[in-house]
Length: 221
Image (cartoon, one colour):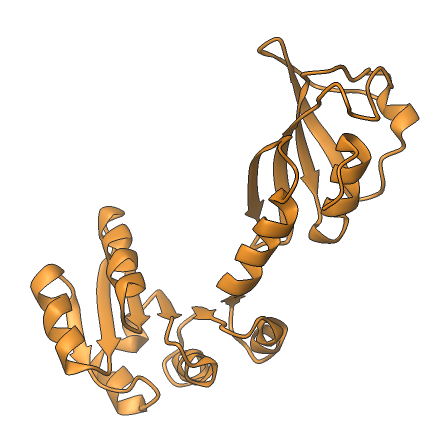
């Protein structure tokens, strides 16, 4: 797997290390000479000094041979241009762009970026979902953030205790995929009753994640 990373700072260093651990070949484009020298000393990657919004620099990086291009500069406009050049000029099929302004995520995808991700949105979402909810013991997203998988523990204060799933009337696009009770997994059905200390594995969409947690735990987020 050939991967091109554009950007600087610790994020590029640790991304490169992670890709190396998977056996990927990594090329890095950075516009600061000092950072290029430091990266060259620390990593067995191809390091190119230059501005990746310049097609000639992308040509020098052999972008047409890349499986993935990842643009993580602090400038959203640069990240968009780099991904568009990689796709249109060099035929790269998979591009990923860091979006510093969360409002740009949808715009980037409409303009051809395969995946746009906002660390601001991800962190704020985690804070909102976890604030005041000690019952949440695990949370991660799949399908590029379009689906949340959450593990919660039902306490004695849960409003759904001793109720069956049909009585709870869960909203659409929500699924209790599994219940762990006394360390034993249970695949729930409509008649399954919920008890204190049950650990529920929830699958929800981001838009109904909060209401479902409130329904099951009684806590506000």
